Image (tube, rainbow, N blue to C red; front, side):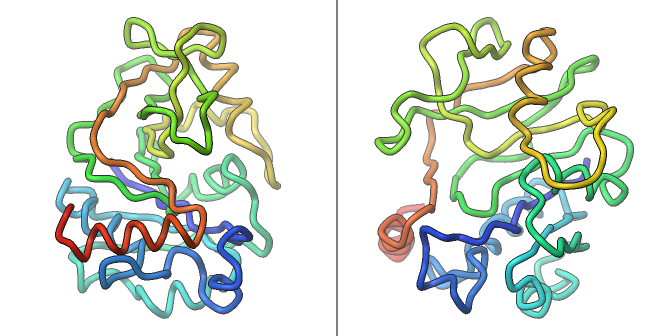
Length: 222
């Protein structure tokens, strides 16, 4: 299985930090956010990693190179303008192969062990859910008997970590489009599984949350 790190976001809420540095390269605990992901993916045996980028994308490629220093094989999917999550993944499909692939948002941090994630045969996606953070109290999806839905309760927050089958994007065309409608349609057909992760997970969407992660990692609390 290959992996993809979503790194094309502009990071408006992180300004002015992201005016000259792409959000995935902002440091926490002495290393860029995206490097934490690369290292965990390599530990999980996921060495072939695709990274999409838009805002200041050339700086991401210059900083990470081919990934060999971490034992990874990095490839890039540049976007002239950010294509949203769905469009970004769809554009990168030729780099990701024909089988299921792992996708992780570049602006989160977690201690989840990626190696244990699987997509069962016949399903289109498997999502990792977490407890609702204070900034997203209503959650996203409900989880019952290993399947996700948009109607039931309680609802949990999508972590930004999931495994997708290329067939989820069947019928899509190029351009910018969100991922959520594809997932909701697949959920209505019972084709999206999920799990609740109770370990450490942080959405690094503001400078304050970045500072909190930096303090945590420097304390060695990881």
